[in-house]
Image 1 (tube, rainbow, N blue to C red):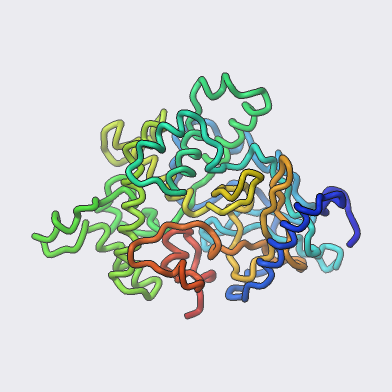
Image 2 (cartoon, rainbow, N blue to C red):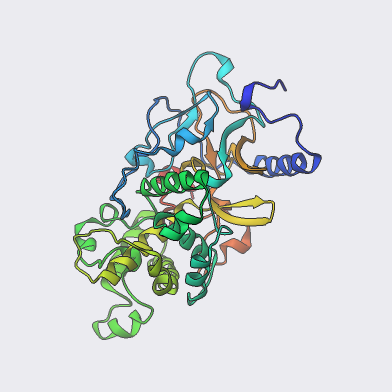
Amino acid sequence: MTSLRSNMLPYNLSSKKLAALLAAVIIAATATDAFVAPKLSRRCGLNSEESATSSSSKVSSTAINIEDKITINDKIELRDPTPDERGKGGVQVVAHDDSSTTIKALEVLARIPRNLILASTDVSPRIIDAVSEAKNITWATGLTAVTLAALHPTDDDEITASSGDTDAQQIKKAWIQSWKSGGWGSPIDLGPDIAGDVVGTLITTGSDNDHNIYAKFRMPCHPAIMKASLGLSFLTKCTEEEARDALTTRGFTYRSMRDSLQELVLESTERTSKGTVRDKRCWDVGDTLDRVLARATTLQLEDGETTAIVPIHERLAHSCNANSNLVAIDDEILLVATRDIEAGECITRDYNLAPRITGNNDDSSLTGEGLSALQLLLQFGLPPSAWPES
């Protein structure tokens, strides 16, 4: 394989790192295909997604563009995801008749500086204090706390950071502000009838003792959750009970971290819903959790495996036969092609391999089977084109 500019893997990788890379590529290449991404061709920006933003800062996400700090293969083009893609897509090989635009296996698609990713291992005393007070600590607790701290840096954070790290802080903050899509449950998803019962956001609506509260009204849970479960069962062909369990699990995850992580929110988002200052901070925790769940991945760093959110990778389309994988080498995270990718083909990742939250009745992570339409939609916000045909 011929080495071309900075787009190919460096030839002087250590045997250990090369072995790790090849192992990751082989694992990814053995998956069976369940979804073929559409061929697309339009060059435009990176930061546009659908639905309302949860960002509380006044800094424009276009003022500091994280794309400018990432080395992207010149055969790759970025465009805004379409509404039908629900924020997942728009990264593809340039569509030309010239065969030279084909991406070869092991070719580097993007080089992301290590200090621009969000990793659950990147904790400060402030984050540790907040996470330690959570009622149920999971990977989602840690990664949500890291994201909130990056979105709301304190003066002490900026003082202790070096000049380069300060720049990275501002770039990450603007990047997080650009996140607008998450899992299923936005007002657009719900429609006016269900959205009218929501207080704050769907993920923050309801409580763990809903059964006792609403039993006298002959309802199994909060009205918004009950109506949303009916909508999810209609969309994904699951049962109402399965949809309700999934929504309840997501809500429990939020409530287990709500009280401790809301302290990390320094300036809450202005909303049409009325609430106290604390209510609004809690709603921001819910919004951030929703977007973290939809973007998270596992990543092998030098200190071991961690959960992380990586620029560009977090918005890739889904395929069970994904054509890319992440590899950490020194101070960079490489997005690497796991097979040849034709001109016009989307760059994809496999969301079946992403970390996720599971309820008491969910054993899908133990069976080795792919995620259901309900799981792909609710946590990752993936559109029907990415769901299994069954």
